[in-house]
Image 1 (cartoon, one colour):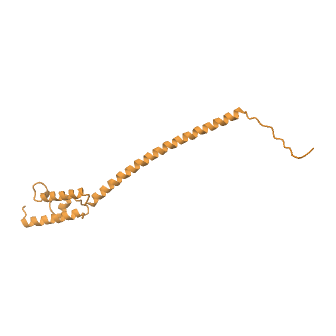
Image 2 (cartoon, helix red, strand yellow):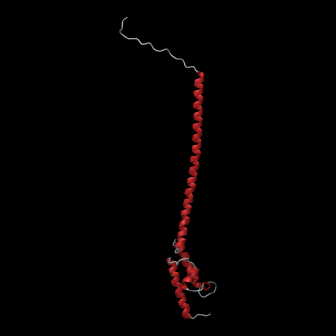
Image 3 (spheres, helix red, strand yellow):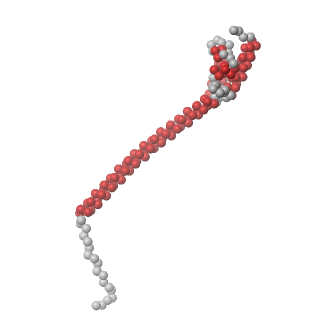
Length: 153
């Protein structure tokens, strides 16, 4: 079915208006910033954007503008922006988790060493006490005499 030049111009105007809305970030619920949503918003068959179809030049323009925005760091689709933000946040959290796990491992190793040192020191103290008790070489000194100065007897 052929369309008239006026209908084609009207369709192109609707496509360009929908393209501008999508690239500004006005995404309909359930849609994305893509050709499928563009076709739906402009009320045009999606196949008209591919191959040698009448609106393939508009698809190329849309993809070029979308890629230019992405390269500039602008993401018109809020879901894509959220996905990018969540991926970055996820990577940071993975780094923090790895650092925490490393710290836990180091502290666990230190705890094990500290307990081993304490056990060795306890064994040494017990050994020294047993040795001291078995030797019994302690000699008691006689009690000191008390004398009073200045008394004559």
